[in-house]
Amino acid sequence: HETLQVLNEVKTTLGIVENKKNKPQIIPIKLLKIASVIISVLLLTGSVYFFYYWENTVEYTTLNGEIRKIDLPDGSKVWLNAGSVISYKKNDKNRNRTVKLSGEAFFVVEPDSLRPFVVETGIITTEVLGTEFNIEDYPDNPKTIATLHSSKIKVYLSGDKKDFYFLKPDQQIVDNPSSGIEIQQVYADEIKSWKDGNLVFYDLSLIEIIHKLERHFDMRITVHNLNNYSDYYTIKFI
Image (cartoon, rainbow, N blue to C red):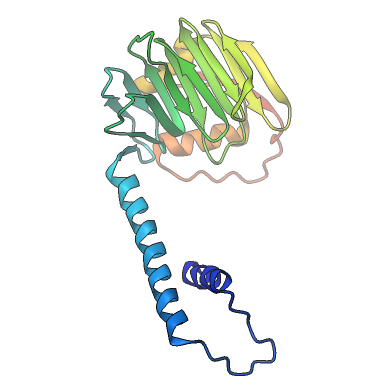
C-alpha cells in the first residue's frame, strides 16, 4: 500500500494521467528516470526517519503479571504496572523531561523548577515540577485517571492547553467519555499500593475489575450470565 501511494504521488508530481480506457500509455524514458529518483529519495527519507526514531527512543514494556521499577535519566523513578509501555527520547538537546505512557504508572519525580516533567497519554497530558502521582490510561478502558499523592499537578485534557485542572493531594481526576470529567477525593496511598502487589478497586464496574485481575495475574477470566454489568464496586485486597 505504501509503494502504491508513493507511485501515485510521483504520477501526480510528473503530471501523468491514468488512461481510463485501459489503452497502453507510453511514458518517456526521461520521466521514468525522474520517477525512479523521486521514489528512491522518498523511501530513503522514510527509512532514515524510522531508524532515527528508534535509535533515539528508549522504551520499557511490562507483560501481564509483571511490575517493573525504572530509573529515568533525570533521577525520577517510575513503577510500571502490568501490560504497560513507557517511552522517552534520549539525547534530547533541550533536556526536555517528557515521557509517553500507555497503561498505568506511578511516578516519583525529581524536583526541577526549570524543567517541567510531562507525561503524555492518548487522552491527557500531565505536567509537574516535582511530585508523586499515578496515571492510568489503558487502551481497553475508555477512562483516563490521574491521582495525586503529594504536591500538585496540572492536567491538560485532549491536548488543549486552555482546558486544564490543578489537583491537590488525595484528589483524582477521571475523564470518562460517557459521563465527562469528575474530580473526587480518594486515598492516594491505596491507589498507588498496586506497585507493592496490592489491589484496590475504587468505584469500578465488574468488567473493569475483571480486566485488572487479568492483567495482574496474567490469566483469562470468563464470567457467564453477567447480570451485574452496570453495578459498581469498591474492593480492597491489602
